[in-house]
Length: 527
Image (cartoon, rainbow, N blue to C red):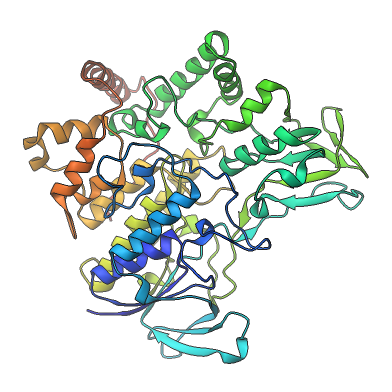
């Protein structure tokens, strides 16, 4: 079965969708309004376009950010790529797999409409800035991969009509120079915001950060072993029941708050001690803003904004700060206006955050699975692999009733697990999400034959769950190259630590079966 497929967007998610569809010998046309690939990572974005800031460092390490079919060069150390390095990686990925001939740049997608006979979709496009030159193309299926960082979310602040200063959004932030000498209020903190706030506080006359909650913070490179934080995304650690892991996080925060060896260690611990449910939130994998708390150039207020005045902000705890500029770090909103007669709604009400129950596998959404720990590209790659196999008829969706049941079960799981961020509907649990897809695709590394390779089995258990482990077996696998990559990365745990931790997990799991430890929310895996 060879299908003619449209992919909308040539960012990381769109590129991997093109690659996986070509692997299955489908015909692919990708439209992107930009002059080059990369989405928000492409260089030289216009001032009025969302883009990365000058000093961007990814919060996911190179081996976790890379696609499973194209790991970093052999021997490359594990570190955080800059935006420029990641964009070059995407360029190399596209060149290696010959993706460029499938991409049409500087092309606006104006509308996507289901064909009158129900057989495929009509996609209306035009050169950017020339809507009169519109043309319509018929496709058997459509991939929407326009990304979640496209339309900034401008929130309404109480009294903002009285405020006489500037209100900006971090989507358009490039560097801190425009904020030099100003009195700035930053609203919200996430991974990008952590750097934005850090830079602004370093040059502003004053800088205040307003937050609603103390979002859990993970240091980019925790501990003394030199590993990035995602090196700890092991099956071993993710086998610890949530109740025990949460207790451990609380104890670690209390201990670090009192006994941390450096001011920043104590500041991170103090911040995390203010959130009782560490693992029920999205993780801010970037502690940079807390360096400004330590050096006194950043003030944090978590009471909430009561109102704005002409040149001040009044907080609910009674504090008032003089300000002339507001930086909104308030994320993005979803916009699917190009889709006609389709109500996308809540992405958590789609199967695997990608398949709408009323559309089936003829239109899918790739890039709306954001792991609390781990990378979006890895999740998008698994979505793309599954979709390509669906197009080929090598995999089939569950029947409509079962599909709806699975959507409800998985949404209930995510609602329960991520109650700390109820409005972040894209959130998924990286390990469970990837393992589930591996079962569907047939690329799970956990099979009887892996135990004939003890070194590999050990790394799969105690090492980082980099995307490459899902190229060991299954469709389009590359076992020996994947094995080499997996074994090239050291385990975060020494052998004796792994043995002790495994024994501890066994005891705790036994207590769980006896009802002495609370069971984790259930993630239904099989269709």
